[in-house]
Amino acid sequence: MLTAHNAYGETTAPGDTTRPNDETTRSNAEVDWDAFDSRSYSNHNYRTLRDDDQQIVQIVRDFFGGLDLRGLKGLDIGSGANLYPALTMLPMCTSIDLWEYSSSNVRWLERQIESPEGRRWDRFWSLLAEHKSYAGLPDFRPALHETARVTQASIFDLPARQWSIGTMFFVACSLSEDMNEFERAVRSFVGSLDEHAPFAAAFMIGSTGYRVNRSWFPAVRINRADVERVLASIAYDMTVHTITTRTPLRPDYGGMLLVTGRSAP
Image (cartoon, rainbow, N blue to C red; front, side, top):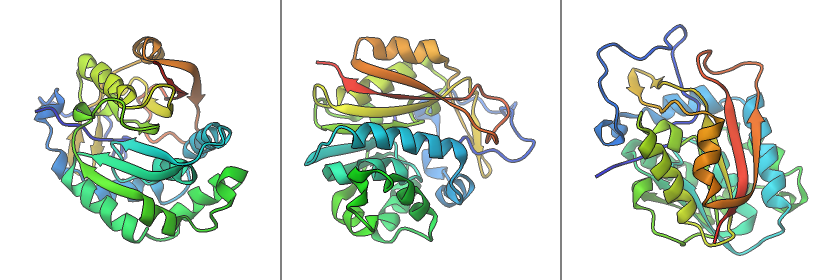
């Protein structure tokens, strides 16, 4: 059975940006996702609020917040060791499913829902709360505890038309080296949303893989045209944003894309 996991940030040790010569893993099913070091990943990527994350949060905040929706059922697919995609949906939702395959990330998410660590997520929430749709929640923690629930499962096993708002951050491009699996993952995500449901999805461009602590994980080398092609028939009202940064996490990929839009009927 195919599995899937979010690998946002493409964590790599300094100077170690190439795929290991002895690494033969290509498909998602061949990866030991349970070996994913959640704490190392989160500390590397979210200890501070990076400028690229700031851009993403602001765009998604203004998109979701501007819709003035409430009472929705939310999905964050491949949550990994990251809370901010769920936070972007928090005021709009009565429930948010954090759908994650890796057992180590599932445990991390469960702990975070109980007690978000440190002040790192406060920085993200402060940015969200600059919009009136989020400002009514002075503290996100009680709402997150009440609303979010973790499900251990694959992106490829998502049921159709079950959620009314969704996020997928750096998942489809970072779960294997297979273009067909990338396309299946995108279709599975958008297909799990109700007709006309708003969504935000982010992608790494040109990535060839990434290291988290001592483990190497695959990525598929995609470009903007690949993203637009796979979404063309399953989404509408799309805006594709190019995300730039002064301090890239890695020098050997082609940047990031963020897509906001709605699921097609």
